[in-house]
Length: 232
Image (cartoon, rainbow, N blue to C red; front, top):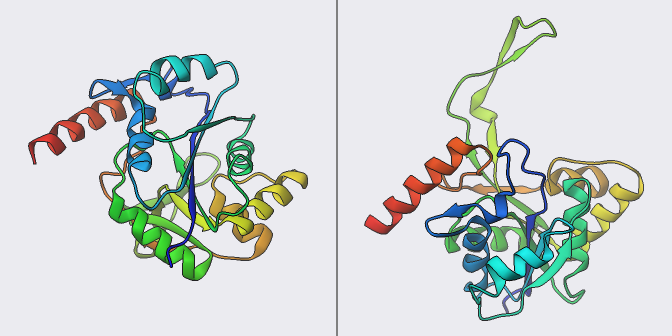
């Protein structure tokens, strides 16, 4: 029997490095956020869908995304908080409590595949938590406080973690709520789950094209990837 899965798309960041609100930036003729929403909305694996947006951008979301590009299913809207963790918790709370698994995705990653969702759901069903990651390609070296190189890190055991990340609904909600209540904040949900509940995420193969759009250069790269996908 297939697990009941909800998805939370985070789009409440401040977009400081981009200089403007990322969810509404144009990519291949559509708002950036829409690419993630469309992929999740058409997935038969996802039962519920929540998007977390910054307070004050609700009307813009409705006008420029949800009303203009109907997704054919309900999309719940939650308001984000000051930290990423606050936004993730708001999104999880907006889901039905009867769900078994939750996918938490950064809305600035438009190119994940259905196959990646399948791998994550399968792993999280077994292990309780799963994250996609790709191996680090370049040398990684630490530097001291005055800028001198220190020991080289073993890149053979280093990975760049992506989203979506997938978790047991109860495990993730409990971990986020306890971390927030304790005033402990983590850069991703897997970190909160490991620190609070002691459950380490299972790594599944990520995807090279699953890039995060953070800077204007990333947006140019994403436009090139979108063109390539149409030519294939």
